[in-house]
Amino acid sequence: MISYGLWTLFAKEVRRFMRVPGQTLLSPVVTTVLYFVVFGWSLGSRLRDVEGVPYARFIVPGLVALGVVTNAYANTASSLFVMKLQGTVVDLLVSPLTYGQILWAFIGAGVVRGLLVGGVTWAVAGAFEGFGLAHPLFALALVILAAILFAALGLVTAIWATSFEQVNFVPTFFITPLTFLGGVFYSVEMLPPALRRFTLANPIFYMVDGVRFGMLGISDAPPWAGAALLGALAALAVGAAWAMLRSGYRLRG
Amino acid sequence: MVVHRGAAKKRGRARQPRPVRRGGLRPHDPRARGGAAGGRLRPGGRGDPGARPRQGGTAAGPPGTVSPVESVVTLRGVSKRFGDLAALEDVDLEIRQGEIFALLGPNGAGKTTLISIVAGLLRATAGDVRVLGKDVVEDYRLTRRAVGLVPQEINFDPFFTVEEALRIQAGYFGVRLSEARLTEILDALDLAGKRRTNSRALSGGMKRRLLIGKALVHEPRVLFLDEPTAGVDVELRRALWRYVRRLRDAGTTIVLTTHYLEEAEELADRIGVIDLGRLLVVEEKDALLQRHGARTVRIALSRPVEAPPPALADLGARAVAGGRVIEVEVAAGSAAGPVLAAVVAAGLEVEDVDTRRTTLEDVFVRLVSRGARGSGA
Image (cartoon, rainbow over all chains, first blue to last red):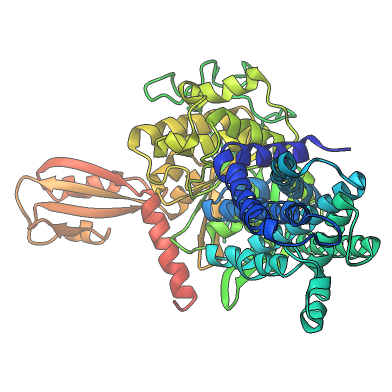
């Protein structure tokens, strides 16, 4: 049962990003749509089909996944870090909310923002490429798992960080490169063996590949193995965030 | 640390335990002493409902302790270290139900550290901290419901209005803020006109009042005010004092830290002086002033003298202002009569007599400098 305290924090976090939709929803959608237009439509028309799917359609799941994870991360990381900077984190720390309630309220809001951005991205791409989904529940479950994983990572980073530079470190040096190298724009079948091995070692590849399976019905790796890996990573990230909250690390002194 | 036992009884006033309603304070509650029916903070508003004399308590046991029945907050052997820095060292303290307790100390003395540990913002390195008998770490959900904290630093969330900020804070405590309660808080803090104003657009004083409102939404049994009037103008400061008294009269225990000794003198029932992480003294305010205090009698003479007459010199008198004034320090509890009698007996012509009472500031400076010497600082 969801407590009123958890609901309050969750609703507050959702309202926070809804107050600035241009920054939190529209801006990432515009960026992702630009990827779609440039890579999918402009260049994609010159590329051959990938695994029997037109290139513009092939990249949609990856772009959706990219939008989901970057925004799920950004929501929790920026919100909690700004609370630390502004001192409003005191409001939470003196409250009787449990560590689990704080954790899931933040993660929940991050997931909502991630799904909104991912959903709008899918809707825009769908207007061009169609809305058909091969395994909609699998796609949704995987996207939610990915959002949970990155929302939890955002919390971990916000707790650990002492500067905005550190908050930006994860998306700049981790999420974006690994996502771009995780098969958003290509199939591993298109890569030389060395790069293929690198891609297969990238956990984000399994997320993109799994979402692609859910949306298009094609995949380079066994989708359930990818889902299991994503689930394990999400559990790890959530556990780490919970442990940090519970220990009071860089929050309670 | 010294506590005067039965100090109140000595003064012929017995402290009556104040009934504390479950659910905490409602400054407008007609049951609240002082008839705080209006309750606005607005300067020049209603009279001070908290002006009734406050009595000393019955301290018992080690310094800083009271009977467990009265105790709302208990610290036993509490220490806090930040690396090599000892912010608190072996602090024992009990806060009584329904009192205003002022924690005084210079910058870095450990005041904020102490209340932050009770409120859950910091964790003690050692010792036992309890609120209403519950451990603040093990039973944090229970203890935090009983505590409200007004932090020293002003903070606000620029995404939300005053009303939203109050509703959100109440929600964290599982409280759905009723319209009546919201209005009550807004009125009491003179923020009704700013209800739908973004927190960012409030003045500094209003933001501080909003912090107080946020600390009160869940009707805490104990309210911690960390430097509540820092940077606040005199009018607002006095309005806040009135409100704090009203809260106390409605049954809320108040613990405040302050740099303004005048504030502690004006408000506090008991005072703790802390320096370098050590609690130097915890005592009833009046007893503290009485015990550590003295009066200075200044006698202005019509004709200057080179030195005080022997009878006055024996009382410790000294001539100042070119011999036009004789100053004598009269110990606490002693009468000034013998001084005046000696002046008359010496045939001195008196122009004016002035008595200056020792202030809390004098006592504080004396205690802190003594504490610093004791610690070798």
